Length: 294
Ligand code: GUN
Image (cartoon, rainbow, N blue to C red; front, side, top):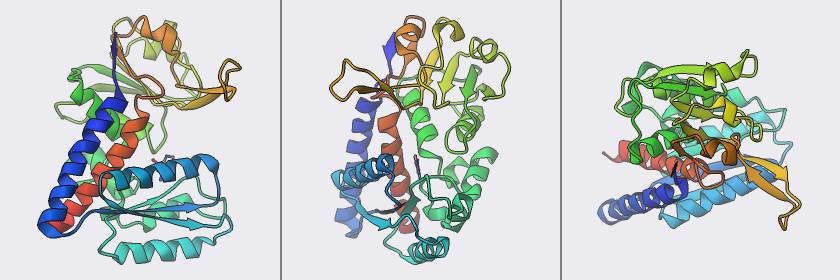
C-alpha cells in the first residue's frame, strides 16, 4: 500500500513557495502578507493560528495576528475586516472559526473581500468553483490540498467514482465540486454521503476514491471499503490512549490499521491531509499577491 505522505509534500510545497517569495522580494521589494484574526481563546484555534503565523515566517511572508476578546461585538470585527480589505499590504485575510455565538459567521464571510478570501469561504469563490472558474477563485485549503496530493502522487481520477463522506461548507461541499470538475486531476463521478444517508457502506464500498470528512474517530471500517481504493482521511480526532504520555492520541475518520490492509493508497493521521492545509493557505496568499502585482 502506498502511504500518501502529506508532511513530505507540504515541505516540498513550502520550499517552492519560499523560492517564489524570495524572488518577489528581490525583484519588487515586496512580499505577500496574511492577516489572521482570532476571537476568543479556543485552545485548538490558538494552536492553528500560531502554526499559520510560524509557517508564514518560515517562507518569508509577512504575517500578523489580530487577537480579540471573546465578547467582541460583531460590528467591531466587521469594521476591522473593512479596514484590512483596503490595506494594500494585506493580501489574505483569515478569520479563524469557530467564532463566539454573538458573531454571525456568514456575515463575517460576506464581509471579507473575495479577492483576499484565502480561505475560499466567500460565496463568490465557492460559486466560481462550482461553475468551474478555478483560475479566478480561491479554493478552500483542505480540499485544494487533497487535490494537490492526488496530483503529486499521480493518482488517476478521471472517470473514477469518488465518494465524499461529509457535507460541510469548508470540506465536503468544495471537495465534491472539485472532484466533479472537468480537470485532469478530477473528472470523477461524485457521490456525497452525510449523517442522514441510509446504508452508507453501500455507497462507500463503490468508491474508487473515498474521502472521509465526517469528524468521527475511525468511522470508516474495512467492511466499508473496496479492495484497491484510494482512501483520503480528513479527520483529526483526539481519543483516549493510556499507553501514551499525554493519555490521548490523534486518529482520523478511518480505521487506519484495518483499512490499510485493503486500500491501494492512503493518507495517515497525523501527517496526511493536515500539513497540506496550511501550505495551500500560503499558496492562496501568494496567488492573491501575484494578482495585485502582475
Ligand atoms: N477553523 C478550522 N479550520 C479552519 C480553516 O481552514 N479556516 C478558518 N478560517 N477557520 C478554521
